[in-house]
Image (cartoon, rainbow, N blue to C red):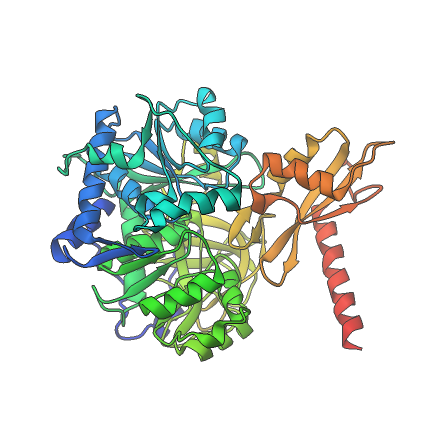
Length: 569
C-alpha cells in the first residue's frame, strides 16, 4: 500500500494545534503522581457531595497498589474492574497500574456468561466489583482463574448522612440487599485498601511496549476480543485530546464524568485527561438528565464529553430551561452520529461548542474529530488528530481511494493498539501493513474531512454501547422454541439504534414477545436485549442457506421511508 503523501486536513488546523506532538514517554499512573505533586490540595473529584483531593486520591491508589501486591498481584498480572463511575473506579484503575498490573475493564451490566468469558480470556487474577453485581460474579468464580474478589458499594464514598441512607434506597430501587461474609479471598474495598501503605512500588515498565489495559471489544464473528493498549497508546491519545482543547486551562476546568470509565471513550476523554491536566471530575454513577442538569449548574461544568443520547436526553428534559448551563465551553460527542439539530440546539442553550468525533476501542479510542473552535462540517466525523493518518481503502483495488470515493476507513498512528490478546490471527487480519482496518465504510472530501456512510461489520450501536448481532442470536438459538433468528439494528430517535430480532419458530411452537424478552434478559446485558421482535414464517437466505441480514436491513429502511412518505401527505 502506497505512502500517504497528501494530508489536506492540515490546512484547517489552527495555529495553536500542532501537526505533530513531542510526546512524553510516560506511564498512565505517572499522571496521577504529577497531579498530586502539582495540585495536592485541589479537588480531584466530587461524588454526590463527597470531595477528594489529588493528594488523597494518590495516597488511596498507592495503598490499594500495595495491598494488591500483598495478595500476590505481580507486574503483568490482570486486575479486572467491574465498577460504575465512582471514586473507587478511579482508585482501582490507578491502584492496579501502580502495582504494575494490566487493567481489564468490565461492564457492570454483564451477565454471567459474559463475565466468565472475559475473566477466562484475560486470565484475571483479581476482580474489584460493586456489591450489586457480586452475586453474578460469585456464580462464575469456580469457572475462572480469579483468586481474589474485592467488593465495594456506592455508599462507601458518600458523605454523611447519604452513606447511611443509600443502602435503603438501593434496596428499594433494585430489590437487592447484599450481606457478605468476608474471608481471605473476599475483601471489603475500604478496609482492604486502608490496610496498605501509601508507598510507591518500583516497577520496570516500558510505556511503549508494556500493556496498561485489556479493553474488550466484540466482532461479528467469534467471542469478544481484548484490545492490547499500551501505556503509550493511552497517554498519546490523552495528549492529542489536550491539544485539540487548547483553550482549556490546566488545573482550572471542571469535567462532567457521565461517560462510563469502563468504556475506553470515557476512560480517555474524561478520566485520563482530567488526571493529566489537574481538572476536577464531577462523577455521576449513572446518566439521569435531571441530576446532570443540576450538576452542570451547581459545579459550573466546563467540559462535557458525551454521547448523542446524553445531549438528546438533556434537551428533551422539561427542566432544561430552569438551569444555567452557560459554564460549558466544550463537548466532544462520540459513539454514534451526532444529529445537526441536537448540535445546534445544545450550542444555543449552553453557548459552548459541541463537535463530533470518531474512533474505536483499537485506537484508544479517538482518531478524528471536528475542530472545536474552527472549521467543521455537518455530518462529518472531522479531521485526523495530530500524528494520525486516516485514509480510505478502495474496495476494488485495495489501494488508497480517491477523493469522495467510498471505501474502508483505515487508521495509522501512535494510539493504535498492539493487537488482540492471544489472537495473532485476528490481529493479522485487522491490519494491512501498519494500517488498522476499521471495518467502517466512508470517504474523504477535498478538504480532508472524513465521513462514515455504513459499517462493513454488522455491529449495532445503541445508546453508545456496541452490540454484536451474532452474540444476541446465539442466545436466542438456545431457546427451545426458536428455529431461526436474525438480529439487526434499526433506527431509534433516542438510542441511535435499537435491537430488532426476526424469529422463525419451530413447527407447532408458540412463544410471546414478552417471554422471549424475559429469556434474553437472563443471558444478556439489558442493553443487548431485543426491544423489537418480529415473527416470520421464513427468513431470506442465500442458495446455501445463509440468512441474508442485509435484506432485512433494507426491508426496515423501506418501511421507514414509506412511513415517512405517508406522514408527509
